Image (cartoon, rainbow, N blue to C red; front, side):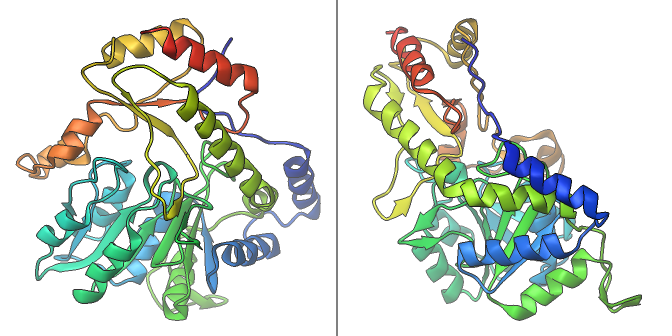
Length: 363
């Protein structure tokens, strides 16, 4: 067998919608993008959604719209893709890293509190691997300290916290990269119910233009195309089905993987986890070292990956920026032990059984 770690599902619906756009001749941002924005806003439960060219751009625009600038501090997690922290650097602001929860791998509220200073202006929480962070606790910290909350929901399309979609609590930022729970190839979305923030985002996205050839702020070309939006419309219709398949696959793996030292993913009772990744943790009792296990899986045709092997503050860029003394012991420990197994919705029953058979055989 050959089972990849991720596999986008593109079918006739996406092809037809893209062909319709191509035949229309209206390829750049237009009515299809607007329809995608409206439907996505309705799905998340917010007043506005602003489509952009990718998820990193969504974070960049959100921070700019929130007024984050030089000298400000933004607290975030070190255990995520580097784009989250880099978007803070784009503003001339300083990322401040809080440690993570040992069960969910999300940003830890107590560590956030320890890192709040007079320069702190915002918190970026990441709903890592599709499991929402502790929204209620983080919102309380933001309210108590007059901080802006930005939700990095790049891995959490359709995830819920206490029955409410993530991306609806603060300024939401989504990615539609090819391997996400839904895709537009590349692309991103900002979600908000604050119309002032939404209007700023629209201006920044499109050269600061409020009417044809009238530019009132410094803006960029961060637009989404009608082609991307057409794919997004088809994918959005399937998102709940995709997520349920991921959750079903996770339930199967949770109930059948039985190897000492293999810690399976945690799901809090008040959330809906959408399993962008199925991340296990290999403790000392596990029969193999991580690299040896990955090689073993590869020999048996099973893809795997490490998300993420290095906390952001240990990346060469951040060491050069002076983050060498940062200490987040949980993030350090987790990053040395985690491993992602296939969980994507294209998995077949026989493939899930094979994954279980191979993993359990290491015992």
